[in-house]
Image (cartoon, rainbow, N blue to C red; front, side, top):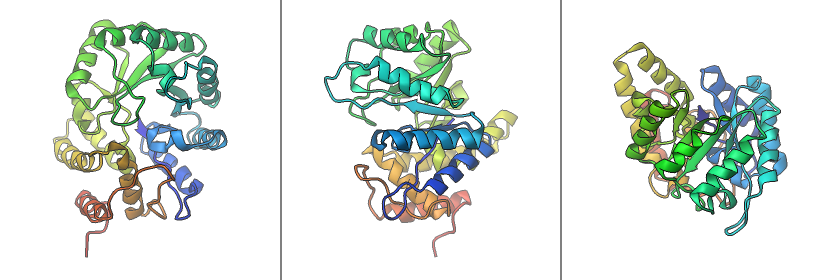
Amino acid sequence: MSAVLLPHTPEGEIDWAATEAHIARTHEVGLLPGVNMDTGYVQLLDRDQKLRVLDLAAEVTGGSFVAGAFVADADGDPLDHAAYVEAATEIASRGGMPVIFPSHGLNGGTEDDWIAALTAIGAELDRFLGFELGSMFVPYGRIFSLDTYRGLLDIPQCVGAKHSSLSRQLEWDRLALRDEVRPDFMVLTGNDLGIDMVMYGSDYLLGLSTFAPDLFAERDRMWAEGDPAFYELNDMLQYLGHFTFRPPVPGYRHNAATFLELRGWAVSDNVPAGAPRRPDADREVLRDIGARLGVVEPPS
């Protein structure tokens, strides 16, 4: 699964044509597009924009996508169960699978509260994905204990969970628990600093793959076929990940916009108001990495 960037025009508007094209190219190479995620600026979208993204994903993929069910709130707000169910239902009604996106209300209680909330939300859905998102991504992010994660595996409608702690050890612990308790449960790595977690049994829902869904699909094919070329391609993609997911981590989205512009997949590297930008010097580093990967014209 690949979280899809939402390109913007030089004027700061959503570039809907580029968005549709990027969902399509992600789908066409065999990855499952993930829309309205952090990579897609879901926290900055209004309801109409989020629904338009869902409609595009449904139209392009025939309903083969995942999407963040996001509820905007403030620190100290209680869980809004009805809003979560509504957001998840809007996704499911278009054929997609909801990812229950963190919020202050969902993450602000005890660990037992988190499991209880997801159990109650799941009771009104056919299936969904959980989401542990670290505080380096969003201020209301939270990584839960392994005992609490065990409770997540007991929710029948929860078929997997994205884990974005950027910690290999925490993810390895979850993989071992998954193998012991519920082998069909998907541990979806969100570790853009360790994209080789697929070698240890993780699936993935990455933001880094939006830079190059074609190359990630090729890497996956190499791994599946036992092609040793997997390692060199993975290393180069990981170099891209370590550069772009440096602190402050949310700046990776501006790097992604620049990379898509360098590839000719976007008309600008603009980001919406409220999203952090990287220094101008990043462009030439990204150009060099893209050239090494064979997808960007080399620096002159």
